[in-house]
Image (cartoon, rainbow, N blue to C red; front, side, top):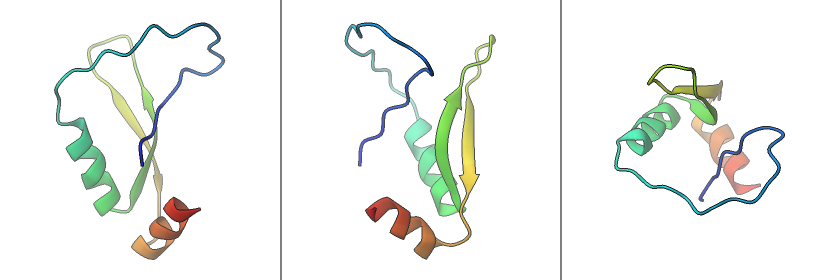
Length: 68
């Protein structure tokens, strides 16, 4: 399932998307394998991105939430 993270309270017209090659999707997969669900991305003022996660108790709970 494709997910898009938006800036809170943003209103306006989007002008396409910019894609860049990275391994972030692999990191997201590792988070899920370790019982974490990615719920947001924080962009501080430096060059880093912070991935915000929710702890999921077990894989069966995670799978039921995805199906809803």
